[in-house]
Amino acid sequence: MKNYYDYAASTPVSQYALEAMEPWEADNFANPSSAHQAGRKSYQAIQQAREIIADKIGALPSEIIFTSGASEANNLALKGVAFKHLDDKGHIITSEIEHKCILNTCAFLETIGFDVTYLSPDQNGRISPASLSAELKSNTILISIHHVNNELGTIQPIEEFGAIAFEHNIPFHTDAAQSFCKCDIDVDDMDIDMLSLSGHKIYGPKGIGALYVRDARDSGLVPLIHGGGQEAGLRGGTSPTPLIVGLAAAVKSYPIKSAPIEKQFLEVMSQFDFIRNGGEYVVPSTWSVTFHTNEEVKRFTSAYPWLISQGSACNALSNVASHVLTAIGMSEEVARRTYRISLPPYKFSEK
Ligand SMILES: *Cc1c(COP(=O)(O)O)cnc(C)c1O
Image 1 (cartoon, protein in one colour):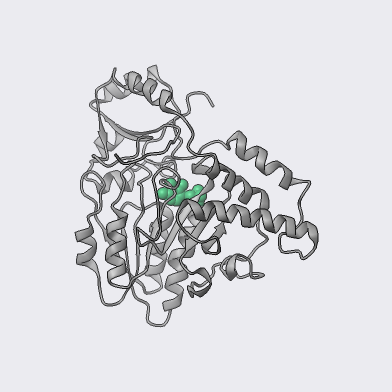
Image 2: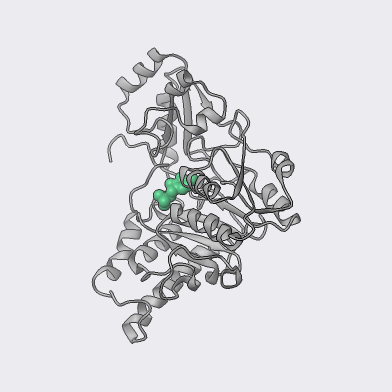
């Protein structure tokens, strides 16, 4: 797609993933829960996909629960834990700069009696481990902090959050929709108990994602969709074989090489006066830029009519400054000069 630099909002499906999906759309359509030979074939394709995804994050295949995407995975993680505590309720810690699907789930849980603390980021969008420690309560039932911010590209110190959670025996969930495949993740090394990921941010299809759940079958997580026992009983519904196979193929074919695009991008941007937000720890593909003046914004947008976002795609249709930019201390006026440019994602390795 010409002039498209909004890859943090969505990516195309890679050719490799498309080709992997094709045989499962019409030829091998059998229900993976069917006991006959064709059903077994679908089941095995799904199991293979589960292994590929589990491998990527150091998990077991049985710990991968397929969902419709990261929004559903986040809902399952938060409500699934909260619904275990419907009698005594409890306290949840998250941050002010989560994706809307986390924030709106937390807002809902507050309406039914749960207590939620929203940690504030610093001006770069980093959440400090010390602020997490300071907010722990004796009835904290869950910590949920994202890995990479979708608007700023900021990488959070999740291994430190994980260590704190582990030390206090509190489950730790992270929304990794913007980091999965782009950053190295090991759920054991990082003490992650649940992790959400999405297909359409990594060249897989839309409508598929997953929640990693440590010891899924014994987790006691309450399902949102009760059904025929699929996905370890945590997510009912006939498993979508093509989407699952496509997701795994996208994972397998990562990283996408896009270094030349970054070079061209830097050349374009060198003509303008702007600052990059997000500080020192950012993924290389997501650029939150604030132009110095409105004239500079006009000069940029008229010379380069790129398909980009102000804030994230989800905020773009409303006229208010994004909650992320506000949380890092930006005024409405500065937020209006701020754009998110996201390049084709590629793998980021810390030096
Ligand atoms: C895109 C995104 C989501 C939502 O993922 P879907 O698969 O579209 O539901 C959640 N969290 C973050 C950080 C995202 O970037």
